[in-house]
Length: 157
Image (cartoon, rainbow, N blue to C red; front, side, top):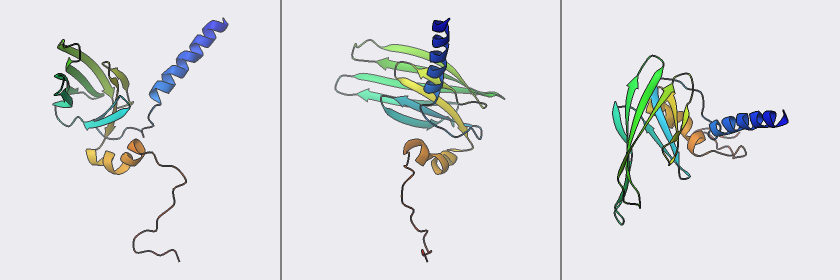
């Protein structure tokens, strides 16, 4: 009985910790923004076209490559994306891999993304909404003890 309870608790913790790696504000809008977390870095791209290359990498020294294309289809509940990855790693065996994921408007879905990390989908009204409202918190978390700077044209008196 104790082992079942422990297993249940560990499962719940794993689910919440995997979804809580990045603290995004709630969805707003209908433009899908993808956040790719891979190799300690992050790549953000908007799905503003029906199909789009979201990642392109090529190493000219060993001829390895990694290209990922996303094709989207919209519905009343969100977007469904079909990813195609063309990859040749240092084993020199070219491969084509496929992955499909649904990104509903009601949640910020997070999926394991091929063998290179995770993909998170969230919605904004436009790309500018992400840049002006979320970029500082999303990409460069600031500490709470930063000094305040006076607004231009105002004095501290």
